[in-house]
Structures are given as C-alpha cells and as structure tokens.
Amino acid sequence: MATVTESVDVHVPISTAYNQWTQFESFPKFMSGVESIRQIDDTHTHWTTSIAGVKREFDAEITEQHPDERVAWKSTDGTTHAGVVTFHRLDDATTRVTAQLDWEPEGLVEKAGAIIGVDDRQIKNDMRRFQQFIEERGHETGGWRGDVDRP
Image (cartoon, rainbow, N blue to C red; front, top):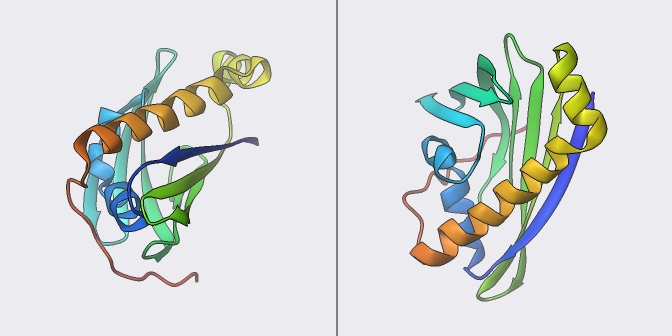
C-alpha cells in the first residue's frame, strides 16, 4: 500500500477551506489525474482518474465527515483508494489543510511511480493548486456541512 501525506497553509478561514473540499466535483480544477468526480448522494461519489496513462473508474464512500475538521473516504469497488483531509485553524484567516491518501498501486507503471516518488510530487503539486484555487477565489464554490459519523 502506498501512502502520501501532504499539508498546505491556505490564507482563507477554516470554513471556506472545508466547504470547498466538500465540493468533490470541483477536484479536477486542482487535482491532476482526476478527470471527474460525480456526487451520487451525500456519502457516495464516482471517480474517473487518468494517471500516467492508466485510466480508472471507481466508486467511493464518505466514511467520516465533520464540518471544519475532517473528510474521509474509501473506495467501495475496483481500485483500492482511501483518503482523509483534516483542517486546522491557524488563525482567523489561515487554515492548514492536510491530506493523507492511501492506495494500492497496480501494474508496473504505478508501482514504479510509487517507488520513485512520482505520487508524492503529484499530491504536493495538487495541494499547491488547491491553495491557489481557493486563495484566488477567496470563497468556496459551495459547501456541504452535514455530519457523517465513522462506522
């Protein structure tokens, strides 16, 4: 299993950063390799990714979500993929966003990419793009403030 953890400080209030992260369908705007995410209902999404020429589709379930604290998800079919993003208030206008992603590399290209750190660089760049995206906007594109308790 490959794991990457990356943090970025964004110059927006915690609720703005959190609200934007709940807008899964906006992920392709800042996450390279994510072609689309379709929100099926409050706790289910369908992902289409294309990373290093390897295209995958899978469903994921939001397993835990607490406003201004965390969003966690895991795949429910196909690709083994899970993640959690936490939000930490640094001051009234600055939030530390930390993403931890876990996945099972499949095939030679994905396994090689994980070994040489391609995935780490991609997540680092994705977090920087999230920072630019939300700071340039100054506000979220939407938000879902519901609670999902861990099973």
